Length: 369
Figure 1: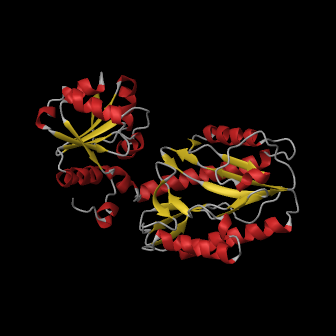
Figure 2 (figure 1 turned 30 degrees about the vertical axis):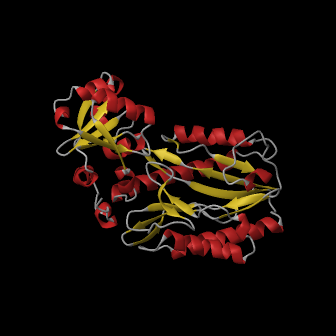
Figure 3 (figure 1 turned 180 degrees about the horizontal axis):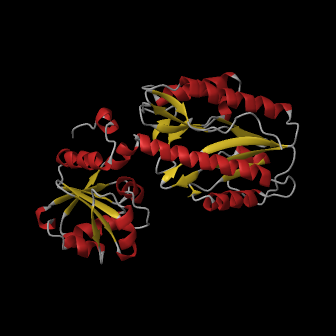
């Protein structure tokens, strides 16, 4: 199979070029059409915001397929390069399409289509369904300027909610679950939705990188880690800040916070067009290790962000991804000490106009309440 080059992917700036790219790949995949099952990929290609939709791309055409519930919405949302088909039973409608008789092999995203659906499609349509790489996720790595602006907008809203919820916290009264619920409520009120369940972790719970909010009361003399992100008009944001509840943080916390902050800044300084994600991770990791806390930083430095909150590229010790024009990703070093607490500081960064651009504007100076 011919290798998909990064250069060809970075040049796909609009719906038409992305469709044409997939159509060109049909030959390399040795299929007559490509079926997109994974909803985030469908949304990315078409602009559709509903909960049920599919894309079928043939050598000459591109089709968006949904049911009657989204007939009107799809007319408004779906990109004009797609012909809209309203199905009354998916396989039944596909079987009756005028061109389906000329299609023998249909490629599909092998990572996403359930086995039962694959067997059903193949049996009912009488076509050979061929497991294929996820072409759309490969394209999604590279954002055009309009998409970057949408992520920036999502992050600005995220920052606004963060500023508001800091004032909501009442030490000794507010519980983790209360704050998490307030975050999601304010996100919806502002016109977005939560890109993921907010992480609100106080005290020893903050030592868990992906702690779940519980009934713990946010008390003075403890750290509070808040990881939150808004999804706005289909595009995600992500940010973590760790604050201290109380006016005078203990010396141990201040030391750890400064180490994480320096690791965050050093990693951002290292970002440049063409650098490997592994190399940027190594900058932050080396700093934390030299400070004596290497064993307390167990996750990768960052991840890509777009229509999903986790996508390529990866910034980790195992990453093989290069950071290039149009990529948007997180920088989020952390130190997590069991039985004490943790610190994570996360910013959004992108490669824009040949240089790094830090999207996150919320200050990183230690906040005390």
